[in-house]
Length: 150
Image (cartoon, rainbow, N blue to C red):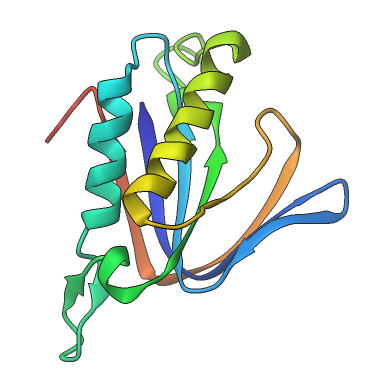
């Protein structure tokens, strides 16, 4: 499971011209799922994300988590996080899970994220053509892959 986390001043998802979800200060989390992902990956990633100390404290040092600062989280599915560009110029998405596996895993990820955060998270719609707007704060962008716990 791969995630791309962006600290944002605000973020939103629009589908077919209608606003689906929006947050103010918080995290925009893109998540890509592959067939080898498990419930353990979900639990490890969600705990890691809500505890990341990437928000400024009173001294302007990134030392506070989303839990400590009370922000919101917007989760958006993104199969392109598993793009392979090894051969040619057209990315391959062979590692990205098909919807029958990915949708339940995405839903479990969102539910576990809400549990870890202690409040509802906002979401996009799996498989939809989404327009995502954000104002990256910092910029702070962090990549975490549960298959490569560095």
